[in-house]
Each structure stands twice: as structure tokens, then as C-alpha cells.
Length: 269
Image (cartoon, rainbow, N blue to C red; front, side, top):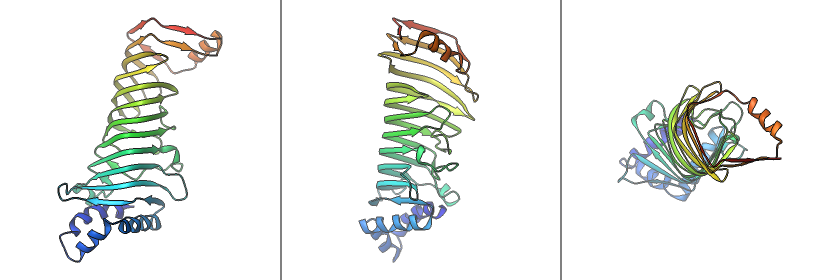
């Protein structure tokens, strides 16, 4: 896969030298995009599809890919985007698939479609998401979100986790299910370090009310919540009170420093 990353910086140089300038022009045609897609798909274990490669000398360090689709051969795509903006940097001469920036627009990142034990071969100092759908079901906190906007710095995804092992993140989502808890109009900001997740700020509409708070989760799954505010929550469950209380006993340890609750109403069978 390394030659794929080396291709893009070389593309920017090609325009300055004949006959490379001819190749530079051809690659930005529909035929060139199709040829490059087939070349990558034939030479690697990954499948690539795109409709256009764009480069503009007003932004010489950026390559734009349109109608981008990337995944394992013969499997559903892992990464799909209407538009991908690749930011190039000198680091690519030693680490070709590590980009300075990566912007994904109008698409999906679905880590459920990764082969067992494999990870996306692409990394970036900064990942920017614009109207994306994320499905990361096997991460420490299973995540499914739609209408996602935000960023991850740096972005080094693992086989199991969209965020990677060490990163800072900030994102909003029209809807998000995090660790089987659904919410809407979600705002989340924090960091992850070697399995420990820190949430500096999280807010969401859920259970017909709203929630805000901050806290952290250690690598063993135990929670330390510094502040949690629940407003107008209507928690409904089909479980009996006995079954509901039992489910709370099997979750990891939760320590709450401050809890503010206004007009909360549980209801069940």
C-alpha cells in the first residue's frame, strides 16, 4: 500500500516536467481516475473506486478525490465519501499513507466491514468529518452516529476503534448511540489515552429530556463522573423493577461526584 501514498506527492511534481505534465492532466480526467482505481485494486488487497482526482495550484498541497469508496476486496466498503481532501506533507516520503490532514464529506466510516484483526491503512495528523455516518461496533464504547461533524487529532484508527489509542476529539451528531445509550443533538469533546477515555464535555437530548456532564472511563470500563445533570428525563423500560435493578448491578463501577436531577420520572412494567 505504500506506493499509493507516494503517488500523490509525485502527482503535484508531475505538472512541472514534460512528459509528466501529460500524465498529470490525464490523471485528472474520468479515464485517469478509473485507471488509478483499477491499478490500486489490482496491486493491493484493497478495493478503491473514485470518479475524479483534482489538484489546483492555488492549494498545491491538497489532492481532492470525488465519489471515494475504499474497502477489502470483495467486501462492503469501509470508507465511503462524496468528497475526500488529502493534505500532503513531507512526512509522506517516509510514511506515505500518513497525511497532514484528511477531510471526509457526505459519507460513512464503517469499521464493522473491516476484516478481523485489520485496520485502515490511512492515518492523518487531523481528521475532519463533515456530515458523516460512523459505525464502530467493536470499540470499547460501541458507537453508531449519523450527521457527524467534528475532528480527531491525530487520527490513527485501530482494528477495533475509530478514535485510536491516543487522540483528542470533538464532534457533534444529529443522533448517536454510545454504548447502547441513544441520544440526539449530541455534542461530545474529550480525549483518549491508552484505553482511558476522558469526556471534558458531553451533552445530548435523551429519554425525552436532556443530559450534560463530564467524566472519564478507565481501560477496565469503570466510570468516574465528575458532574452529571439530568433534566426532564423520562426513562421507560419494559423490565420489572427487580430486573432493572439487577441490570445495574452487573455494569462496571460508577462513581459520581455530583449529580443534579430535575423532574426525572422512571416508568416500567
